[in-house]
Length: 273
Image (cartoon, rainbow, N blue to C red; front, side, top):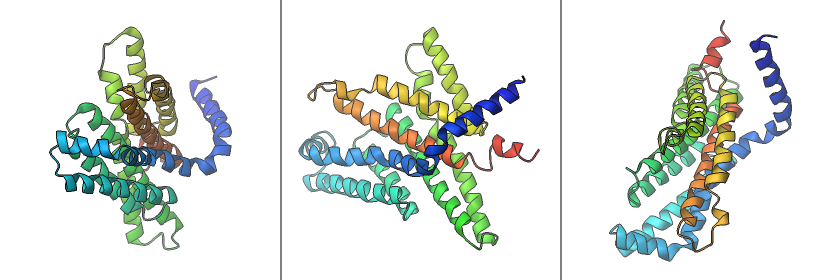
């Protein structure tokens, strides 16, 4: 039996296993994508005085500016997250959540830290995929799908999918290049690198995205098990923050699994031959 037939049979098996979840996949993906913003809004509210103290003492915020910063962030995260989940005013939701990423990066002085930057780029990739999904949905639903304006929207969605795929994999750069390189780590890094390349070029994109979701799920539970730490442990909040950010990046990959890589991909080009 040729390797092509084996791959086709594996894909058919995975399709059958995933079929019951398929109708719920878009809403699960959107919820996961925004879960870090929802968790962050809860954290800001429950630790409001600590957040305000940090901004005043360590970031030089005036008292009223710290209040404005925190209230603006919480309001934007809650409103835009629910808009994204409900698939209403998606463009507004994406712009609002992207503004939150920028505000927090500059506000907390994290924008040039490599760990924050790589995660922020991957989350931005998820937001771009959300925007692409909304634009593709508009063109599919319209009875005027043949008119030039909606064709342009479809093309914009295709470019956004490519841009989103590229941004999504940035988180894995920290897995691939950071830390001490051992044989086991080298094997994991190679698998992650191959998966990232397949996602970027759009080759077997759904299954490579699924592989990266599995990889991220396992590493998230192993490395960011914040629930096992004492509530006063100094690393608990950091691990919880990373845990929910990884969930959001997984949401972006789930959107890719649901909608496919788009026209600018090897998977799509193969259909023309």
